[in-house]
Length: 438
Image (cartoon, rainbow, N blue to C red; front, side, top):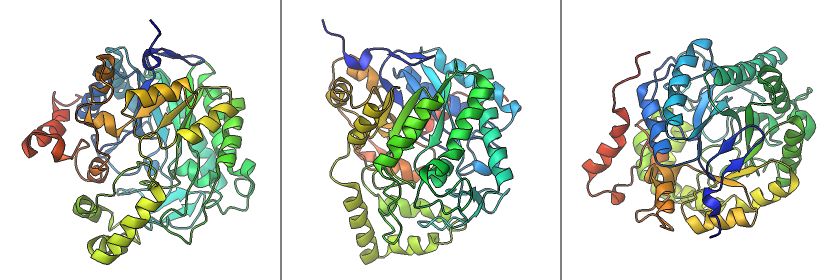
């Protein structure tokens, strides 16, 4: 019988994964304020390993405290963090699942900055235009320090026995702020032409290779297109697919083992994660951002007033387009044809035949999934049992997204559960068993 593409191993330069379905990076406030990890984080990741995915890309893991999106995310900013990540890796490995740590830095895109720093570091000194998060342009010394922070993070991941690292160079975070022609307004060697805007990312790749060698898996997540003007219309559109193809070719030459394709120069973005914009749910949690974003109170009023809310929702839907599942596949195909390394694609996947055809037709080599796996942790086992789509699929309502700022990450679509209490019980299950001892 022919082999099911979903369950063929994927072989990278120094890593083999048992199937073609990865858990994509998805973040929750499961950890301690100081960046130390907890048992809840281990429980969270183990859910997906037990559910059958071949590999997990961790949530956003800051390489410095100043680089976090918000407090209560486990970091990799010091050697003392290694034992926690080792324990997490061992828990995931027990289910024959690989664990790839996503090395990250928020730059100016910080929802809740914490008590340490009022302003984010960025390629630019311009506030983030959607929420108004403040920032300062990085000096050359700060760039050099951050390059070394990424290299040290990779070393710690290797010391923890993890299977590789991913650089989060997509969705508006620090690397995007350097790469994007719509954001980067520098007049030094890190601004201007694309080659100079890509310099920071390529320096980080080189520093990681110098630190951990070429036999430790390194992949990069990229936004295929910025669509930087999707919501704020007076913003420039930013990088095109052709720009990103060139960056991906440079990354291939620099020794990156795989690419991970997404889209959008900010987060959340109409195309990432594609789906509804749940304003009713957002109003309950958006107040968390009011003290950190100069435009957040304006947005809060927009969301509460019927007319402006309707305008925002229509703009969101128009920028997203009609496609939800596999929204990034066309761009992924172009990138895959242009490079010699495997390409992963994210974008709401939860239909087995869509994934199979994407792999067969060489749009990508594997897919990464976040929300549909939150909805159905055992999605891979369902596919293995012959189901083409889960009986209770993810509805792309994005309630998980807007709740993650304030509440435990999980599925908040009560229509998928027999009762509200059943939904709460599932969300809270991540806190059992007891906390990691430290």
